[in-house]
Length: 85
Image (cartoon, rainbow, N blue to C red; front, side, top):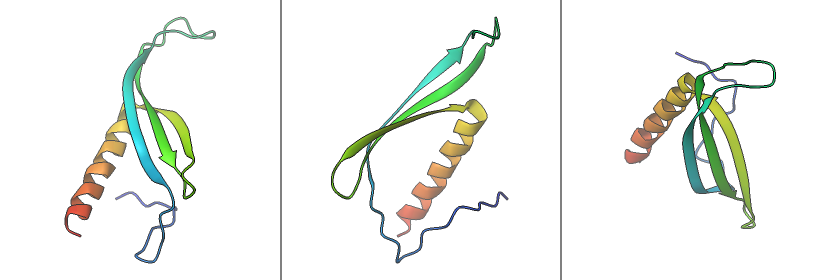
C-alpha cells in the first residue's frame, strides 16, 4: 500500500476550489532535440479550476501511462467512497 505524505482532508476541511472542466488526450512523443526517436506514449491533462472568488485558472500537465493508470485508479476509489456518503 502506498503511503502519502500529503495532508488528508477531514470533515472540517473546506474545499475552496471547484473543478470546472477536465480534458485529456493521448499523445506520442516521437523525437526531441537530444533524441532522434523516443516513441513513448503519454497522457496530457488540461484542467479548469475556479477558486473561491470565481476566477477560473487553467492547469495542464503530462503523465506517463503508468502514472495515468494510477491516477484513474485513485479517481475510481474516490467515486466509490463518495457513493457511500
